[in-house]
Image 1 (cartoon, rainbow, N blue to C red):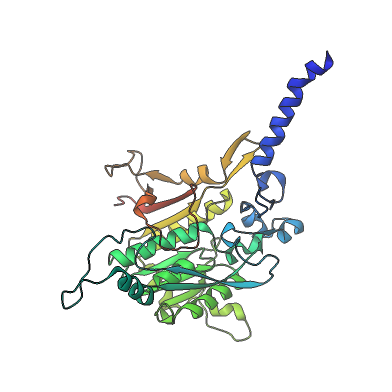
Image 2: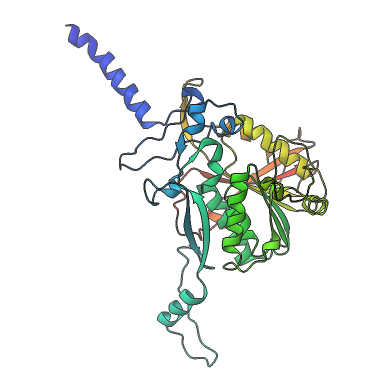
Length: 378
């Protein structure tokens, strides 16, 4: 009799256990992020929700030493320590683009498809060389390459190949990490400020600028690696390079601050994963967008789902809080009547952003937003 009575309890416990194994725990609830093996034996991508706390010194010593890994790096050598160099390839033709057309040469003769393909391989292949960490501590997640940065890079490539929208612009990449987006934009921009915080992150950004300037054919003077601490007011501290202080090379000059205020385009990838960090990000975006020329922000993010004990549900860390910062522009371009001076966002359909970078799988959890600020955003 007791066996029959216990069956519902046992079934319930099995369901609960299966549920917790299937859903990655929220590190803000359980204290430290968990990097656990997937069914294939590879490491799953961890959440970055505690990165801000660890980076600000508020995390425990144990949290600071936890190593996390982006799934973009799953093909890298296992057990490798230190910085690693990966190559991300692309061409002016997006992946899956149709090649169903007839081409002729200058004499009017048919160009065989084989000849065209060989010529394209020689002339239209490009490579981004990126130095990055395969794993990192929570406070140094900017040393890794994340999917949202590759999506934003695809967007910049698409615009540069199909329009002149970014030609000659002055732009700022906020929370640049490895600087991947800024490097790509430097091919066509007048000037790009690649910004982040921390000497280790900024040193790696500078190394990536130097690795790619000749290959991508841009002047290194176009790509300025600068420190931008989201907790500090704008403008940032002004200074000159002091050989005895390595971090001083990332200080701003007065002319650079003036140029940044004239920037028309901002970029940010994978900066939404903690409510505290989101507060600081939008505070910084507001400071930048309130000064000088009118600006537009292009932001990409990856929704990372975890089980929250507070809500007893599966939630995307920080996403609800992120959406609370702006009014969504409807398809007709209309705005909420309550919006006077605020952020206004429009989600970009990813079908409008072809994939150019070959070495990643977008999955289903990436989003892209175009965000404006002001009383009458366009």
